[in-house]
Image 1 (cartoon, helix red, strand yellow):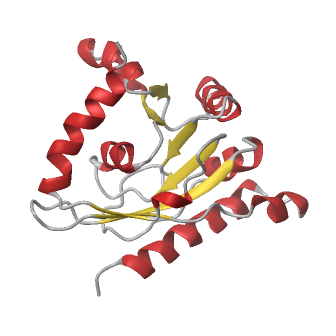
Image 2 (spheres, one colour; image 1 turned 180 degrees about the horizontal axis):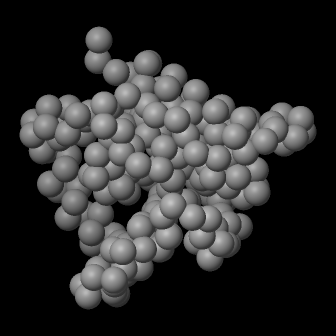
Length: 195
């Protein structure tokens, strides 16, 4: 049994009313082909929030320690999560992500690598740029605008795919590409945040 749609339905039933979720720009998500979905990271609830608001199933990297827990070990792969070793370049996780993109799947990434303590967008890690360059997939920015408080609105805004052709043509570095991705996420935050 595929748990993903079941989990999506259950989590949606809780999150949409509890956080008054408002989703903007779903139509920017390509309907087919590989997509690298890059979002800011403000809370542990971000992965399920992106999972239920994305029009397509999302595969997330999750820290390896979670896969050591007895129940999570069998549950996480059914929820399209795959393990990554934190703090080092994990080649197996990189290969898994690139294979998923090549297979036309959506891979979700939080370029900051960790939650923002202030809610402000932090610096992105070069890994996001690496995947964007190597993955030969559409790169879609996503902004999560919180904070998560019961019955206070959380906005999830999806942006248009980033033009990767010009970046590839000028042989941009992974660091430069990450900066471009982060600037697109910041634009979405600025555009949709409540004033």
